[in-house]
Amino acid sequence: MNIYAVILAAGKGTRMKSDKPKVLHEVLYKPMVQHVVDELKKVGVSKTIVVVGHGADEVKEALAGQNVEFALQAQQLGTGHAVLQAKSLLEGKEGLTLVLNGDAPLIQASTLQALIKTHLDNGHSATMMTCVLPETTPFGRIIRDENGQVVCITEYKDATEEERKILEMNAGEYCFDNKYLFDGLKQLTPNNAQNEYYITDLAKVMGGMGLKVGTHIIDNFNEVGGINDRVSLAEANEILRDRINREHLLNGVTMIDPKTTYIGRDVVIGQDTIIEPGCILKGNTVIGNHCHIGPYCEFTNVEVKDNVEIKFSVISDSIVESGTDIGPYARLRTNCHIKENVHIGNFVEMKKTTFGKGAKAAHLSYIGDAVVGERVNIGCGTITCNYDGANKFQTIIEDDAFVGCNTNLVAPVTVGKGAFVAAGSTIIDEVEEDAFAVARGRQYNKKGYARVLEAKRLAIKAKKNK
Ligand code: UD1
Ligand code: CA
Picture 1 (cartoon, rainbow, N blue to C red):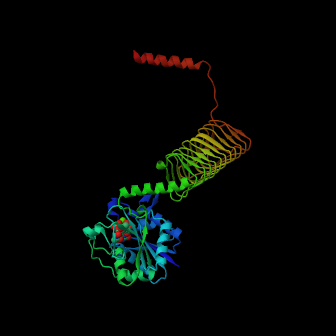
Picture 2: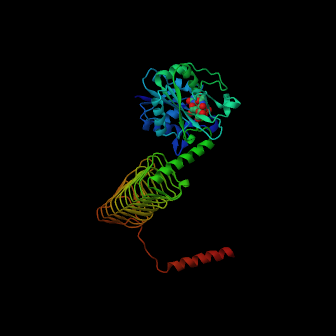
Picture 3: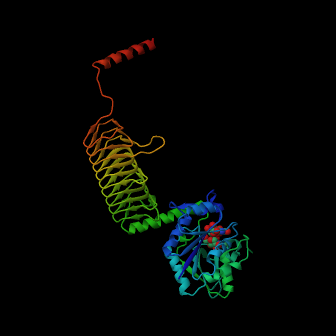
């Protein structure tokens, strides 16, 4: 069975009060529309069409490389009109079409699968997802006849006082038999409070075509209540945070304070790992077993293996092998590969660096564009001078080398295996294997001269005070 999907993402989102199209606002660090696209991938949809309009180029750019197609809705004439823009891409195809509001990022693949199941099991031509709420809300409401059959969906703005008391709401997620969808859409009219072509009118229209229209009732409106303003955006962050954290807790991750722990939807965390308060883990971050992360870490696309300890650090696009400890206050970015049993301490920054097994950089260093061997010791204050204002150059430090404190390594440069660089050196030439390099002014002491200087200073001071 082919399953297609249309995501409605052309609206401006006026109530967001933003320069950015609504569907690009992020929930847990991922644009709303991307959440919907990702859940559809899990459902196994063969073609996803995103209807774009307001900020079309921005939305397309955000979804580039995602294997989705786009349909342009030049004028936003309503949700039904939006689906109609996908006609040339879908009409006549055999299969099911899911239509999803792009402003409902908390929808889950399992819920969409259940929608499809209800649709198929009951032989519906159209299935509307609905939810019964404890109180009345300004969503579209489901109007049923005395037999419980759906008659139509009425938008809050078009509803009578009586209809506004109805508690069964339209979730904005639908499943259609693709064969009939476009025949139905062609019959929509904009005779309503907003002068729009409503997708919700398909309930009545398709019913009128003699087709079976039904509902799939869900329990949790949190999953589908569309985000229309920044209040609901903040609430969505909270709901998703709690949902994700709960899953990790049940999978054997300890969180000291789940309320201050923000974990992206695609992050994986191993068993017996402890997450301290104040951590933000996002992107394609994967953390192994028995790690201790935080407090206060921000990871973006980081792969952390087992038994790693990291505190107060910001890491992106990097790999940390097992047994390593990092922080407090380290920053690792852009393709760092930190090997096993490494120690990286306070105020160390690394960029595009491979840092060998058992190597150490315990304090205050910048290591960029470097390949550092095994068991190397990087002394406090070491700097790779990798940039000449135009180009970046590489520093190579081979196994077992020792780099003394406050060394400048002016790249391109190599420090050979087992070499020793004296503290305070500025190294511009290769240091051969097992060599000792010292590159700084030689110290010399002038006997008794400190007292001479003191006398001079006092004389100047006395003259000034006269
Ligand atoms: C819609 C439903 C309502 C339902 C609610 C659930 C309609 C008419 N109403 O209302 O019954 O209870 O969702 O959240 O469908 N969009 C377009 N083109 C347009 C208009 C909208 O692409 O011309 C997109 C928007 O970007 C948004 C989605 O469709 O992602 C829903 O539109 P929105 O205006 O938010 O509809 P609601 O008023 O929330
Ligand atoms: Ca909405």
